[in-house]
Amino acid sequence: MKIKERLQQLRSAMKKSGIDAYIIPSADPHQSEYVAPRWKTREWISGFTGSAGTVVVTAKKAGLWTDGRYFIQAEEELKGSGITLFKVGLPETPDYKVWISGELKKKGKVGFDASVMSINEVEGLKEVFESGGLSVKPCKDLVDTIWKDRPGFPSDRAKLHPVKYSGMNRPDKFKAIREKMAEKGVDYHLFASLDDIAWLFNIRGNDVKCNPVVIGFGLIGKKSAELYVIEDKLNASHVKTLEKDGVKVKKYEDIYKTLSNLSGKTLFIDPDRCSQSILDAVDSKKVKIIRGTNMSQIMKAVKNKTEIEGMVKAHITDGVAMVKFLRWIDETVGKETVTEISAAQKLAEFRSAGENFAGLSFDTISGYNEHGAIVHYTVSEESSIELKPKGFYLVDSGGQYSTGTTDITRTVALGSLTKKMKKDFTLVLKGHIRLATARFPQGFTAGTHLDALARDALWRDGKNYNHGTGHGIGAYLSVHEGPMGITPRWLDTKLVPGMMMSNEPGYYEPGEYGIRIENIILVEEKEETPWGKFLGFKDITMCPIDIRAVEPSLLSTQEKKWLNDYHKEVYKNLSPLLDKDTKSWLKKMTVAI
Image (cartoon, rainbow, N blue to C red):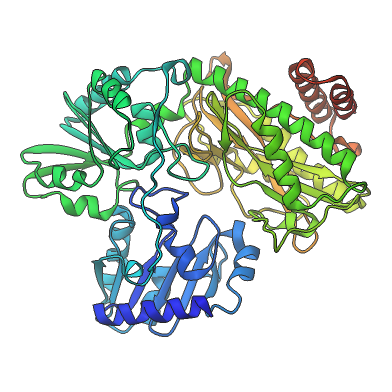
């Protein structure tokens, strides 16, 4: 009823503004994947808590478009709301723009909050709607007029990220950006995406849950560097340090005034990472705008030596916490009451004891049996169920450390498994190993070229999974980081040494169980031949894969060797850091098969 009432209030606001369809994306003014509570507009209006999705509201209908990670979750959370679920990626599902075009009469008006819609998204809307006789009408945030207890801006203080962790100081980063700007004949480069800003200015914060970023904008000129943040976000000492590095700190909201005052200059912006309101602030008659991907994207994605060393250290620390947790699960389930939520809390407890721990990198996915089949399951007091000594338990989790960011998924055999369950687990493992051992030429290969390797064993058995196989990961930054990835969706970013991504194929049997095995992998050079340099992956994650769920007869000799060699490396790296009993448990879990 609460959601229905909110929708009705929104429809009244739409009517007053002359809007026939209103679009609400999952975004903030920085096009973030995860947003601060203030910008959880789509969640507030729909009740759907997943991280990705778009809501469209018309005078009589409402729909939510989301992808395969959230189909089961969305069906549950939308019950009784009056909002229809549209499953993105299925052939029968229309794009929301196509759906709107079919719902509205000619001359209908489509509205949205221009501050949270990217430039490219708005141009895509115009291309579809205006050719069909509809008009696009950027407007104020209509939800703001009805969301009476809306959270304010994040108030936590930011901190500076030292060179001993970043491996590169601010002036050197600015210099590298300016060199690229000079190549393109650019006077100014605007940065709106929070992870780019955090990386470029070597700052970290707590403005977005689990993401150590600071709400702000960055503007780099030929001889200037300006950081726009919420007032009092930085203390006087931090401001002084930034000023020594050539940074002028300004008020967050002043970015629009600065842009409107530009004249006779060339401004570089990323239309995927800047909102329409940013573009609207610039006088296009006085300023030449050049579009392209943020020049920091590849720089940030290719980790330097210090960042790689830090990430390796973070994953060893994280591996210790995971091994302690998995042993606890193994020895406690069936003897004491362990629920999905208490298990997640126990894992957080183990992680928090690790050196340089700074928080979780995302909310832990803790799913037993049928809940494991919900790809991005969110456990709550209401949904949490008890773990029993049988079936599968899937735990997808990660930590933020001053030295790096972790993301790991393990599927645990809590007891007896059926032949089908072991077969499915082994098929997923085969895909994981196939990707982990891939060799590919540098300069040619994007992650998209490799995605099928992880799916091949499942495909041969008539199975698949509805999510990407790998995403980039930040160094004490966002757990999901572009521009590269391993996915069926085309990404043209070529893989180069120093990039880090996840390797996480899975399989999900709705209503029964889910399986996913995830490691973080580092792209590195393997060999050079007359055909050029060939790259491959090195596993950074250190944690055993549950051999009790493996059907050895389905693995080739090479696949068994990979698993055994990986487990030797896990034991070698983690055992010196464990107590006698945990070390003994790890030895048993890494025995050769």
